[in-house]
Image (tube, rainbow, N blue to C red):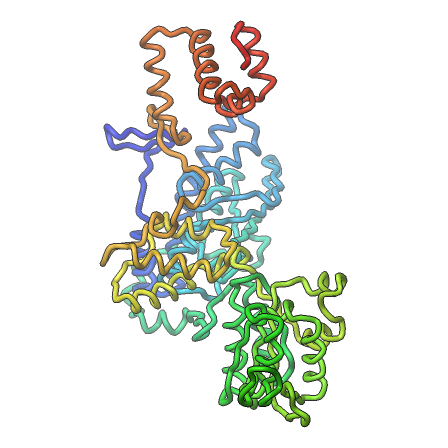
Length: 544
C-alpha cells in the first residue's frame, strides 16, 4: 500500500497522501507546545492530533477488511502502519476483538518510540508516560475499527526508565476515569488561551525532571534496583559484595558507597587482586616488616593500613589465591592484620567492599574459593546488570561521556545522529560501560568540529546491524541491494539470456571461485551441497 514517487514529490498510502518529517523538528514543536500551553493542554492537543491520524488509518483498514481481508489481520494493519511510518515498533501481547459485539481488549509492547526519544532528549527521564501522540493514534485507530470509543493507557514507558513501553486498550467507560478520557474528546483550547499565561516556569513546576546522581547515571529498573540497595548500605559499615560482568562500573559503585557513607572523609583504596602476582599479593594487602624476606630493606604498610578509617575496595576478589583467602577471612573476623614478618597484630577500622565477575558459587564447588570467606563477603550482595539489560541508561551515559570528552579534547559537537544513536542502542556491548565510554571517546576525536557524531565515527569496523529497508526501482520499500539486483536482471532480459544458460554459468563460476570445493561453491550460491551436486549432475557439469 505504501508507494513513493520521487518524480512528483508524493508518498501514497493507498490513496492517502503521506509525508516524511524530521523527528527532531517534531521534538522541537512538542517542546514549544509544552512551554506555551503547559503539560495538560499540550498533552491533550498531541493526543487528539494522534487520534485524528489513527482514525483515518482505522477507516483505511476497515476498507481492507470489507474487501475480504480477515478482520484480525486487517486490524493489525494499524500497528504495521505505525511501524512503517517510523513512529514505533509494535508487538502484540494480547488481543480480544469481536466486531459484532463491539468488544475490544488489547495489550501491546512498543519499542523505539520517537516520542520517548524526543522527550528524553529535551527534558530527561521522569515519572509519567510520554507517548501522548502515539496513544492518541492507537485509540483513534481502534475506535474507528471497532465502532466505539476505545482508549489506550501506557502502563510502562521508556521515558520513565522502563526497557520498553506497554499499552493497554479497552472501552473508554471501562477505565472509570473521566479525567483521562477527556484527553480523547475534542476541546476548543484556542478560546481559553487568552485566560491563561503558562510559561516555562509553570512547566518546570509541574514537570519535574529526574536528576541523575553526580557520579552514577541510570534510570532503568535494573539500575534503580541496584542503586536502591547501594543507598541502603551506604550509612552502615556492612561488607558489600558487588557482582556483575567486567565493565559494568563496579568501582564507580564502590566509590559512591564510600563518598556517601560515614567514612567519606577517610581514604578510598582500590586494589585489583587479579593484577598482582600471587607471591606478592599478601605483601600488597597486609604490608611487610623490614627483613621479612630477601629484598625487604624497610617496613612498608599494606593496602589495609592505608585504608584505615576508610574503605578498601577488593576488585576481582574471586581471583585471590587460597592462602590469601585464609588471611583475608581472619581480617574480616578480627579486624586485625599482621604484616609479613611481624609479631604483633595491628587493629584497623576498614570497610570492605569486594567485587568480582567470577561465579563464586561455581568457584566454591571446584575448590577455588572458600565457602566461609564467601559467606563473610556476601553479607550484602548487589548485582549490577549488564548494559544490554539497561538500554534506557545508554542515552544519559552517552551524554555524560560526550560532555566529558568534548571538554577534555576542546571540541564542540552537536551530539549523535539519529542513526548513530540507534546503532548504539542496538549494540550488545560485551564490554559494557567501559566499552561504551571508549567508543564515545574515539568518536569525539574523529567527529568534525561543530558537527555530529556519525555511526562511522563509533566503530573501527561495522557495528553489524541488521540491514535497513530502502526504495526499490518501483518506488516501493524493499531489501538492500534490490535496486542493483533489478538492474542486473534487466541486463539479463535485454541480452536475451535464457535461465538455463544463466544457471549453468553461475554454477561454473562458483566452482571456479571455490577451486572445485563443492561445499564452498554451494555457500556462494546460497544453496545446500546436495542441491548443488544434484544440479551439476542434471546439467552434466563436473562436480569438482
